[in-house]
Length: 151
Image (cartoon, rainbow, N blue to C red; front, top):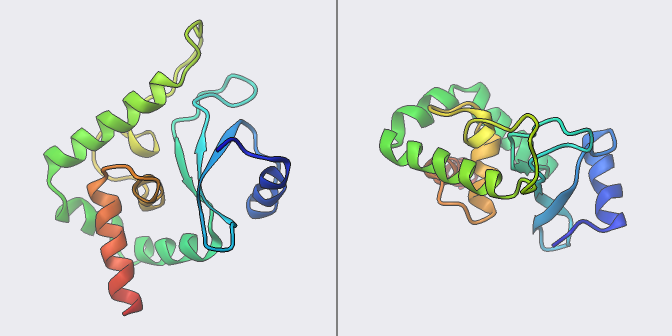
């Protein structure tokens, strides 16, 4: 769903700045607040935006940050199958790249989830894509870890 004026205002508050590119609101909480946005592959000035899915819910951002700060990136990378992770990066990049304008001849985003081609860089990006329906093994792992921590 394309962002509305109220979505832009809400995201501006969440980010502490005006968004620099177009985005869609792809996941909302039960009250309708933004949880995950899908960024356009290019910012308004043409700068490549490798992070297609972005976690913006403050409570989830904090929970995933805590997971990251306790060694979550290394643990996730060790826990998921390397082949499944490589497939996820390739699918993420293909979806993002398919959204580029057909006539675009400038710099392009690179990498997969969070702009990396292999391994795990950012649990937030993996979890965002997972929440948006992506087949992301790291996002699945994050969901399981968060469920354990709140059980």
